[in-house]
Image (tube, rainbow, N blue to C red; front, top):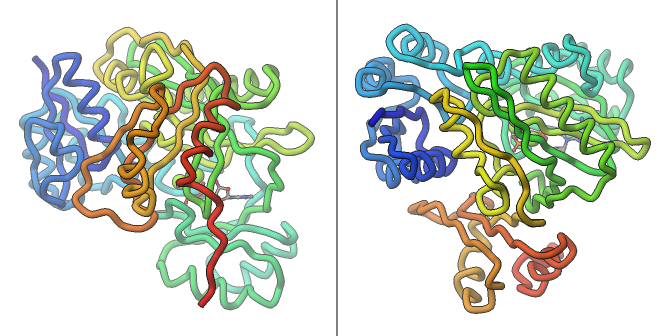
Length: 376
Ligand code: ATP
Ligand code: MG
Ligand code: MG
């Protein structure tokens, strides 16, 4: 059988490996942390930091195909891998999605709406940007941010200096975006194989808590017309940006039913975990199919589903009420050595005849009840 090399050892790599092993592939992962979630599911781990070029050459030497489970792949490593191994996804999409400025520019250039934005390299730039875009606005580091890290929602002129000083510490360019007053956040995951075959998963409705994904609800509670437009946007992005592998497209839906793309992820995505139990093909199997140039699987939804994330603070409560979980709840845990507040430890897919029932079953567990901040 062939060996797939995965750059990165997190839960996304783990679930790619679990899906791919069922299809007969072997996996080698490269990650600095010993016994990483992906390593537990792979045949072998190369313990090395993500920018270790020699380790990357080792990975290339033992892999027939190389993929990655995060977008912040070191440029030099990407170059080495591309020259010494088969990297069907290429590095162009990585370059785009690593940087919010390049990403938003590329999306806008293919005619898809994004929030109006400005590039900021100084406090003067920021003041100018806010004059142009108005308030509120969202300032973000151009690179490296996730789960809302490296962001600042600007609400008044008075906080510009402090916000700039704080985010500038990251040492990257900054971007300021107009604040989109969305009624809902949506995401669509699409796949394409090197042969050009394209498949799109059903649109998910996403609810975040403190900038971390909390629930994905499928079918999304919007009109078929909106779903169709969201899926069409994903299809256009795949075609125009020449995507191979998976791409996740995060979108904002406004009150007047306009769609804006927020960001892209060139890999399996947390909001696609629902596919593991609710679709004919999971996003992870689809990813393997796409990078191995196999025919893509059906993305048909078999049941309404709600995915709820298990963060560190939810893990013990979930274990404590394991006997109360509905029998149609599918529990997935990532095997992380250390549980920390806000760290993604697993998720549950709750299948039900309707998403309302699935939501009610999650609520009955009383684990994710709205925490009212207790101030001491
Ligand atoms: P992820 O964990 O999804 O990678 P991230 O740190 O890359 O997150 P974004 O997805 O850009 O950050 O933003 C996080 C959340 O902040 C969004 O899901 C949305 O709720 C809110 N947000 C971001 N940008 C805007 C905007 N321009 N207008 C309104 N809300 C925004
Ligand atoms: Mg992001
Ligand atoms: Mg996001």
